[in-house]
Length: 537
Image (tube, rainbow, N blue to C red; front, side, top):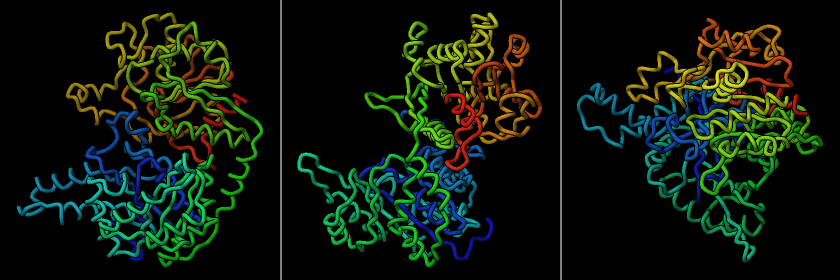
């Protein structure tokens, strides 16, 4: 491990009352304020599940699986961190119970504990601290978000480790809580926050600040009540009301001098340097043009609830590009299983552009293929991402090349025309059911074809994008696909893997094997999404 900054500071963020409050946005906004003051930061997320990482989790349960440049399949909050902070984080920044115990067990098997008893305290606690400190090298401030809520039994060992770090380093702790509005009496209730604060203090952690989520914003009586019952200064109770644009939150925090107060606790100076961010967010509030975009996917609902976080990076990338082009996006999600050939026009004709995002499995595949056909035949702007590119190849092979039975072997292993097939080096791993190790993951280089649409958008020949997939375009079918007009406009440096495709003459028909949405930022929208939205206006 490299030498730690001897003046390293920590900001620890814990949850109270319930999960899903937006701690990730709060964490990212705090990081934004500290970074804008000129300090080098990192963001760390503790997820107390026993999974080693999020790679094998169902999106309907966990939400989006975010992929880092170094190939980590991790919590979706890291997408929020990267979009707000404009930094690339490592898979090591996501610490899970599974990772911690795996490390300790492997050390025990290798006799690194000298044959003694291995215990929660000190060994698990020490491992947690080592993992936090490892990713805190060469930074001034490390911001650590603890997933879940106060009182969760799975969080306790992490809170114990945090308590020790707070004794060893200059630190501050922040609790994010919720004050519900009882509509039948029209009153904000603070009791859950009071209980949450009492619970977190039982662990030996005494937060300096409380960030309060609420529907309406806090009034003076509620602030005074929370301050008195939780032994927190009134000015350290920070209001986090519901807002339409999450990128406004750093500005709301700044108005309450939150960044300045945090840095004062850490013994650091506050410097306001986020004027560009403010100007851009203010522009977002005054957009006149509208653009209507449809996501046709598999993971759009769970029971009666609409899923809004499975494709969150795609949605944010659409917003970034739309805002850049001075347009307000209206984004709708459609379950691909509902799309049939005879219904395509009725369902899809009202949209300015359509995206097929990534996914796995057979559910709704034919609906996605019909969507792609409709876009291709009717000159509707289309962007395919990962699985969306693979199905674009399937659709083109079937309906243009005359290969009626063309398919991907992921869905139809015995297809007579496997235009999409498994990577050869992954086949053995899948047979051994080692699914978590079979992906082509992380950032990979691509060489773009000069004169192509993607070359025009990226404005350079060599690009790097993040991947998460097992299957590729079968090289045996490239000749017939190209002969019929499909252009593979981006390839791996050795030309063996097809990374981008497009249709010349179409308004916008581009697909990529990558996940460009993971690289989009508010002030640096991704060129593919900018090109797509521009074609929709």
